[in-house]
Length: 192
Image 1 (tube, one colour):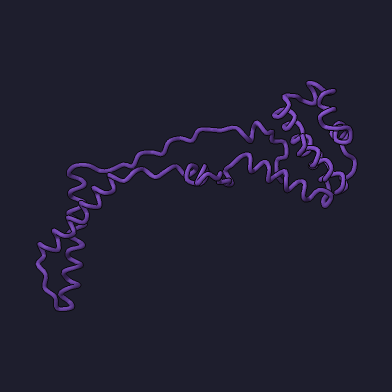
Image 2 (cartoon, one colour; image 1 turned 180 degrees about the vertical axis):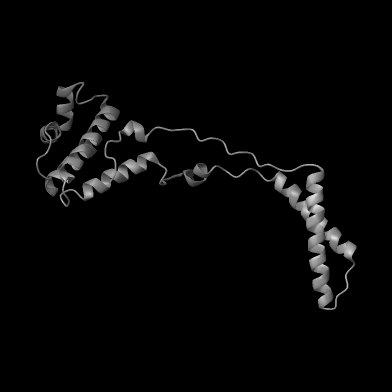
């Protein structure tokens, strides 16, 4: 069951992620010993495999080739940039369009409101859930667009909301909303 008591301020909050840990690279003799051992093993496998098919390549040339490849791999891996943090790769502005993701708090809140309003009238308890959703949306719209709260300035909030919506928001529901009333309330909130 979902928690329907989350406020807009909680959803829009931002917590800084810890920076990713730096990659640990071995240095000095340890790296050279490991590289020489790996190159030796690869050289042995390659020379044995080629001799099975009748090819004869100097062992020194094969070993030098593997050492060169492993050294090149080491150099290029140290030059590559660190991978971007997971959250910045998944969301943000790309090509002028905002990329909504599951980590976007505002999108999550709107999706929750949409789900609650879509199932209004179909399950038990949806009347209270729909009521809480309408209250939350109305309070947020009043606060953001008019700098008013229902509790702080009731006469102005009543005027802005309109009488039918004000009456619905001021008394907890005892039955589910009709689709016509819900559509009228949504239109009033959009005009707000």
